[in-house]
Image (cartoon, rainbow, N blue to C red; front, side):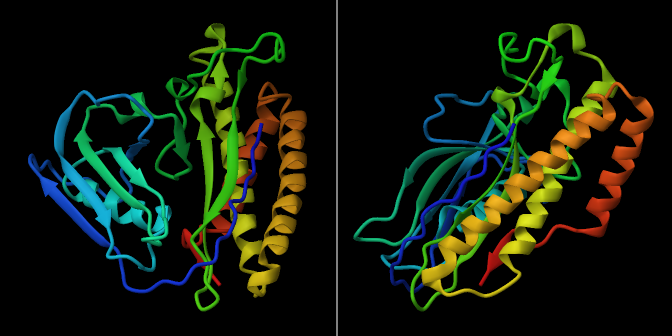
Length: 283
C-alpha cells in the first residue's frame, strides 16, 4: 500500500524569525538526538501517562521566515529531547493568517516509559526497526484473506510557504502507518515475516531518497515548480509499485528464505550507497 501527496505552494512575503520558548517544570535525563519522540496532534484526546516535563512553543512577531510546520517542529523536538521528553503533545496549532505568515505551535512535553504505545505513524530511521506491536490495524479478511500481514508505507513531502524572493524548501518523509497496517493473530511471533514487512518499509525509504534526488536534480522557476514536482512524484510512484510487487513475487511474500535473504542484502547495500540527504531540500 502507498500514498504520495503534495501540498499546495502559497505565495507570501516574509521577514524576521520565529521565537521558540520553553517552560520546564521537571527536567529529565537528556535523550540522544536520534531517540524516538512521538508527536500527538491537537485532535488526539490523550494525556500521556508519564512525567510532564514542561511546555514548548513557537510564536512570531507578524511576518517571519523559516516558520512552516516542519521548520518549527524540528527545533521543538530538539528542546524536548534535551530535557528528556519523548512525547510532544500539541495543545494548540494556529495556521498562518493575514496577521502572520507563521505556523504557531504550543505543546506539552512528557517522558513516558514506552512511547511506541502512542504512535500512529513511524518515520523511517536506521535506529528503529518495526515490531509486531507497530501493526495496530484490524486484519481485512474480505480484501486480503490470503495475507498474514499488510504494511502501509507513505512517501510524500510538504513545502514551506514560498515567495518570489524566497526559495522553496521541501520536507520529504517515508512513514509507516500503524493503524492501516495489520497482522493476523496466528502470524504474531513470526520473525521471518516481520523481516519481510521491514523490507517493504526499507524499499519505501529507497524511493523516498530517489524522490529527494529528483527534486534536487535541476533548478526550476516558481511558476513551473508544481508541474515539475508532480512529474517527479508520478515517476517515483510507478517505480515504487513495480519494485514492491517484484519484492513480493521473488520472495514469495517472504516464504522463499534464500531469495528473502538476497533481497535483504540488496536493500541494505542500496541504502548504504545512497545515504539520506538533509531533510530540508532548498532550491
